[in-house]
Length: 393
Image (cartoon, rainbow, N blue to C red; front, side, top):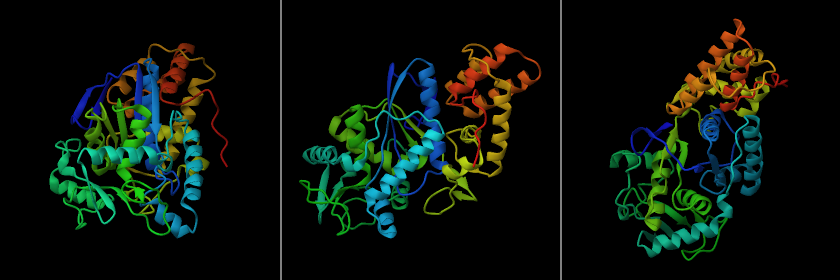
């Protein structure tokens, strides 16, 4: 298997141990699951399924960022407790992921339940001389980590611009350097607060994932993933603070999924141009959503068009009809084609075309073994073709 590694700037051999430890950054639960989320998590689900098909076991950690600078203002706007908002959106997210038949994670840590680990990491960073505190806010000193910026490869100016765009505050005069970032901050009067040696307050965004990831999987993760917008600052900051205390590589392999656009803009909650999984699942079988997203290679940004759902529903019907009631045949033909495609940097578009081509061959008269191979190949991609199309509301 060969996968693109963000840190190494290319497609490289991915040779994990028998038991693969994988961390994928999860959602901030303040709004519903949209297709951008689905595309990201289906990417890693496809990888997990192929790894399992190759004989590996996979321990997936996918967190919930249930306290940060996004969920707290939303809860305030709605007039509800932030944990109540998180609970309702986590429940909806889990329903959507179940509908899409993604593998459930082994661990789903929540930031609010990891405060002790976060504070412990903060103390270790402080003891190592990587922090400073100004007016109750504790920052990570980016100049104390020599490899800061190595993951992204961005220039200093690019990193400053992205920090400004993605939740940082490089113009904060309290920071010694524009690339420093918040580890711990005082809470506003209506925000949750925890005691710490750095004063009462709440954690910054980046340190949450470092603490949760290391608590579940140890100091080095076999594969760390997320959306491409997390490369900087989130994952760059995770590396800096984690490796500053352990001295070990935080992740052996870094994998990032492209972003999904809609109506000419990146699909995002702030813009409101969202296609919700829960709503789309009422219009087409959720398996068709998976099939539609497989038409796009995970590494590249793309725009979603509404006709893709309709087209994928028709394609799913063709696959189900071709598969019939066949039992899976796990070798030969389309099975080998799909495996080869997925081993080539998770080439889902090629795997999808192989499935559809096999369905065409079956419709032209190929017999039972081909049907069984189609069933097996589709299962590797997370598509159960032995069930009829879902009855939609």
